[in-house]
Image (cartoon, rainbow, N blue to C red; front, side, top):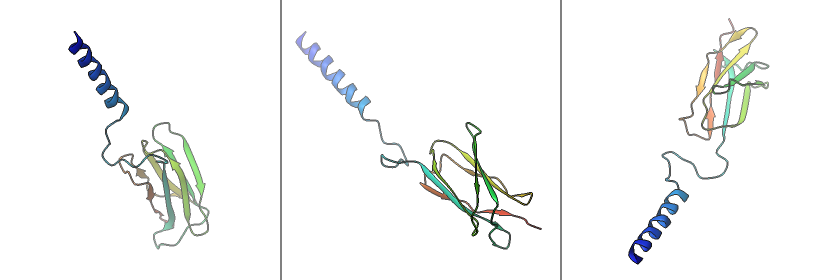
Length: 121
């Protein structure tokens, strides 16, 4: 009886330790801020920046859209993206649109850079 009680106690203690400390995941980052940053530039096919272009970022899970009006050098920036969600990004300028690019949840880089090109002709 005493051995059984000790064995059950040890089993409960061991199972509590296993539950309390999850196994490390492949490609995981240290604890803390694990949000991502998306940056890039909007350019024409001659690599000229397209100031005042509008960049659209869509959360593919909720379909919520954020926009950003690019600066004079064509730069845009979307901070605090959730790492476990896919996002789609594209730009528009003077009625023309870039290709849509995807920021994948399987890309574990903390900073992703995507340049968007718009045919202005």
